[in-house]
Length: 197
Ligand SMILES: Cc1cc2nc3c(=O)[nH]c(=O)nc-3n(C[C@H](O)[C@H](O)[C@H](O)COP(=O)(O)O)c2cc1C
Image (tube, rainbow, N blue to C red):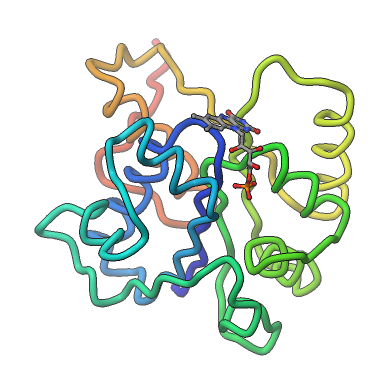
């Protein structure tokens, strides 16, 4: 699998980090194109104390993770692989997805690499998962989610579950990420499964 992962400037950088960690340790994933937006760098600094653009992956990934398969792109690099439909991508996950990036994707703006890669995923009929995060939602947000869903995206709000009694924020984020990955055919060994009595 060759996945494109974008982090944008919505709250929830922890969820993005858990996603990258899961992909690092999954041998089925051979390549990850990683696109952090400029705004995501600010949120990473605010929420995780991770600063700067250089060595970002090394700061985000666990020491044991396979960093070789990751390739980081600037959101301004509109000539990077994921910008083209002929590039062999399996799908794209935006986690977390800001309302700004949602708007850009839903309206086909393609004004940076994240929006363009998402546009490509939709036109090539590949999975596009938008893990949106905002609260409360205004009607523009709601309309944009409907637009994106109608175009083929999966709206996957960053809302953890509580029925498995997560022991920490990391635990809640990890289980959320496992649900996202199950959605693209990458079910994870530690994923909680509901067992009805
Ligand atoms: C600490 C912090 C938290 C933010 N949280 C959100 C959020 O949860 N949802 C959202 O849509 N925007 C949020 N924003 C605002 C976005 O970062 C801003 O709209 C930005 O322009 C989005 O750009 P991007 O989509 O290119 O990443 C937050 C900003 C900061 C600094």
